[in-house]
Amino acid sequence: MKKVLIGIVAIVAIVALFSGCGYNSMVKLDEDVKTKWGAVEAQYQRRSDLIPNLVSTVKGAAKFEQSTLTAVIEARSKASQITVDPDKLTEENMQKYQQAQGQITQALGRLMVLTENYPQLKATDQFRELSAQLEGTENRITVARTDYNASVQAYNTKVRSFPNNLTAGMFGFSQKAAFKADAGAQNAPKVEF
Image (tube, rainbow, N blue to C red; front, side):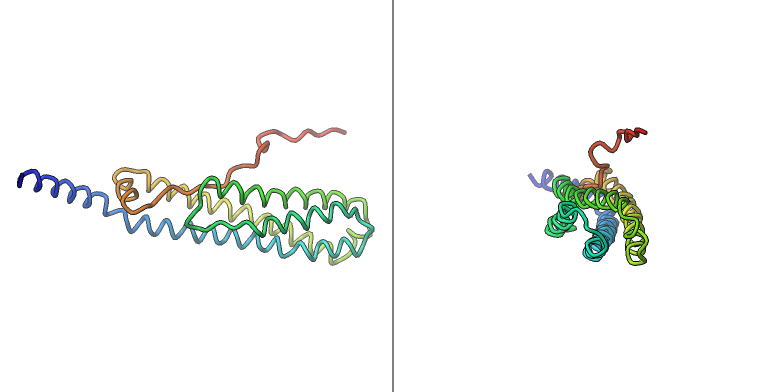
């Protein structure tokens, strides 16, 4: 009985020795994922903050399609209600967040296409400035998402690799979800003249 107990303690000690070395690096990678997630949220918030100014500029400069403006405002409102806790970056939560942000992207896309019919709107300094800020923000979102996905990949690789997966299991480090391409993104757009 005593030999069995010593054997079990020895096995636990060996497992702890091998898997314990990865704990601190997993904490570091987990914090990096959270930081990168914060950067993603900050860029989406920046875009969300630009929308009221853009809508008011468009509304004031043109007799615009009210349904398009309403769609942009509603998409912004819905997206601002969806937040994801950095400790719960699961596939399901990421999908909800990405879907809400995708609705804003689509609504803004329709808004920008419709502004083509209003040359006097496009000529205003305020609209040009807001459009440039929005374009820059979309680029920042792309960079933030790319950085986040790289951080998630490093973290997930660490928690899935042996012997770190033992430590991950013991201390509750679970895989994080990454951003994925929007549905239909793999299809080339159809262009007709």
